Image 1 (cartoon, helix red, strand yellow):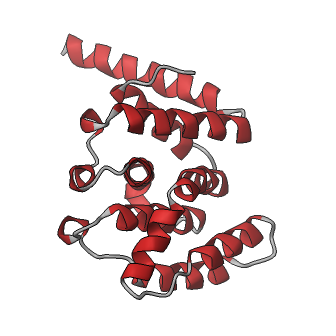
Image 2 (tube, one colour; image 1 turned 90 degrees about the horizontal axis):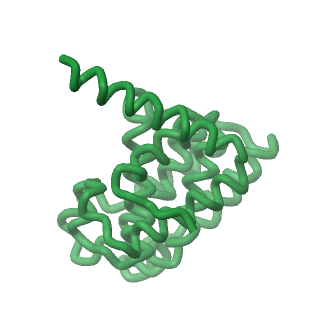
Length: 190
């Protein structure tokens, strides 16, 4: 298994963000599915209708051309309305992390991320890892330096699954790493 470092995490999410919208959203769904039970438990505890399976089903139909972007946006908006608005104020934020990761699937798919696409994708993967591994409030920051060994293992397994689904990813990752090294070298020369 790949030995993951904190710096690698950003490169991985950058590489995934280079994929077309549907493929990037699919990668986020791979992570979000792993923590879906946390969302479902949170929704039940807060007496909120759980629309997660309807969202996933609509996304899969959308990918197959059997649902429109408007259909996906509609279920995504209903799902988004049920999410906690401030994870820092949640007594148990794990379900909120999982829900926000799943919400990112729709935002990426319908290309409604604007300039924050890369950051949103990155945060959604960190949230899915935190939810899966039981990491609570410290995960709100989105800082890769605080990731635990368990979260890095989650992200490694996620990356492996993404690469199996989209074999172009290792090549994209190499491009991001080269660009990062060039940027660091340019900064050092200034």
